Image (cartoon, rainbow, N blue to C red):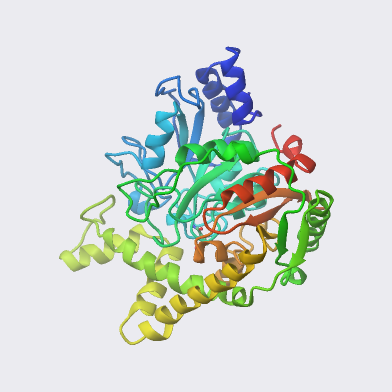
Length: 471
Ligand code: GLN
């Protein structure tokens, strides 16, 4: 059962051949077999909990990244500082899933506070890539992606600030989508960089992504940045003819990609041409600055968001302090890991009065330029494609000591966050080293329809779902 997609299981339940409870048991057995090795979960819900049976999800368990609140269950953000923090309320996405009779499988491992690209910064230890356990699964939603890839979850939610859904999805051979900023409520998602964060699905195929998107996309009064846009049924865009679709190819950096990634990309372009799409190279001049831009804006917002962990309001407090200031310092010193501290220092630096104009303001200006580049590109193209990542999954420990190298692995995914546009990663090949690669498809803001059309048509021609590491 754990090998099946969400839509296959929904069909089987509708035919009364299986139940949500049986699926939960099948996935739980799979977790018991695999998770000692893979470490995809921070918390597993061993008891099956049901929230009705009549909704679309029919009691099927979904895995949730451990930075979204499920009432009464701990939300750790894979950080020591929140190790024992139990929220009193549900995130809006959880409420929406419950309304459609989801159940939950557990909370998945991640980089601490979603800061990272490898899940190595987790306080609970690295998650391993089920395709090759000497490799990282990507990050920060590495637990969700690894779980879906090896049957430790039927489907999952992740969050994406600079690529954290799409990059691990690509490196684990599954589908991951970041919706348009504002499409999905962030209420109850622990904030990393509020102007970039967005929740989205990680699934085995595109149809499953559309099903979860249908459920979580909704205007929410509790999130002032959520947008009031008509709900659409994304499954209507599946299995369509995409002849004549205009696609811009961002291939500027292909020369810097690994051989396997470049090969998969070339093959993907052939597939899309055969489907009748019109492909053209697109130049996005500001994209070359996007990593630098992101590493000013994201840490700036993070340093502000993380100031609330002071040992008073939430979670962990250090022992043996002398006074209030000493308590703050000891709590944050012991409670946060190195990467989080690095981001806080970067962020407070670029926001400090002497440097604000030189760094933060300039970074915001660049963000506008980037937006302009994409706007003029989307005047010509329905979608823009690129590889999701420059390389296949790298070795555990390989980049851990080199933050800059690590940051560069998000070079293709970051622009979508900085410009608020939607983007998906779908599997587009398996390299000679046995590791999967991903194709990223971006579209203009609120044009997820184009993404689903393109991704679904592509997937019908090429997918690796039978090759997922399910044994
Ligand atoms: N890897 C990027 C970072 O470290 C993006 C993380 C994310 O999308 N949450 O910030």
